[in-house]
Image 1 (cartoon, one colour):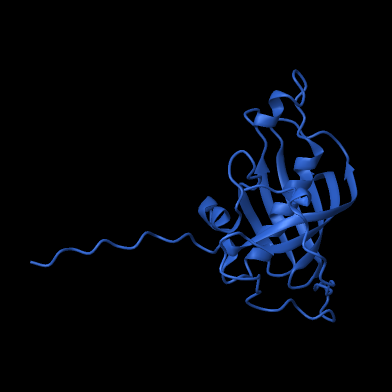
Image 2: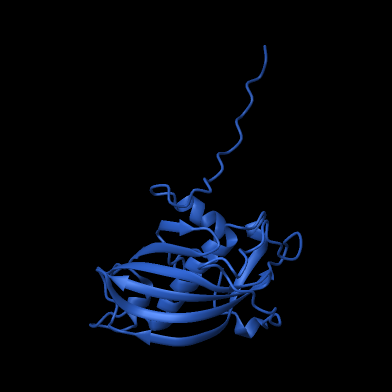
Length: 201
């Protein structure tokens, strides 16, 4: 009598817009509670643009101290949410996304139009401005009910994750700069020190 074989564990879908497919998001981003700031992906234009959703609830741990009696989502976490959205867009192009981390190297022109409070549903849009093998510059906008609440441009460095199999390597090149709406190459920036890393696992 043959022993039945145990089927392999199901792999998360790479279709980030599949309904409720948080597993696909977590397969790409290293962030976990309480620092995973993407609940769902709404739109993806590969190598160009992504729109994601974050539902802000009173259960967010940062509301305990920011501020008691007047809960407001910290602006730095709104910028972090933009970076995580951009990270999803970039890591979709990697053969081994788990080997790569995307770390902050700069934030420009951050503006906060109104407070983000419990009950707000954030629609976070990130668009690639410049892209090279190890560096990316993103333009991000966060909207609530169609109104802009946050805008920022962020620069990030793609680095090898400890224990990864090798240096980051895109499975395909970014679109040529002559293509409308495509990424313009960005010169490689130096790898940031640990003290510069804003994102956490």
